[in-house]
Amino acid sequence: MIELVLLGVFAVLLANYVLALAVFARRGLEGNWLLVVLLTGTTGAALAAVLAALSDDGARYLDVALVLTGTAAVAAAVRAGLPRHRSPAEESA
Image 1: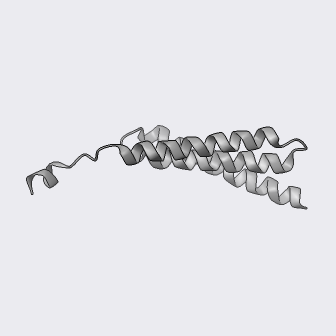
Image 2: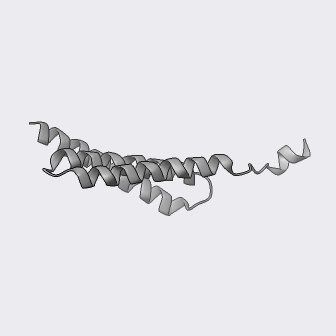
Image 3: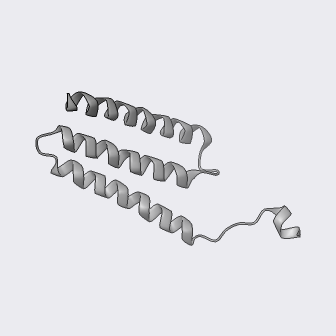
C-alpha cells in the first residue's frame, strides 16, 4: 500500500517538474529564473528521495537528492549576492 502512495507522490512530483520546465522553456531567463532553479532543484531532490524509498539500494538516489538541493541553495546564494537593477522609474525618483 505504501508503495502505491509513493508512486502517486512520484507521479505528482514528476508532473510538477515537467510543468516547471515547460514554463521555463516558454518564458526564458527574463524574470523568474531563480524560482525555476529552486523549484526544479527541490522537486528533483524530492523525486530522488521517493526513488530512494522505493528501491532496495537507495543510497545513490540520496546522493542525487543532496546534489540537487545543494545546487538550488548555491543558485539562491548567488542570486542574493547579485546587485539589484533599478527600473527607470525608480532611478528618476
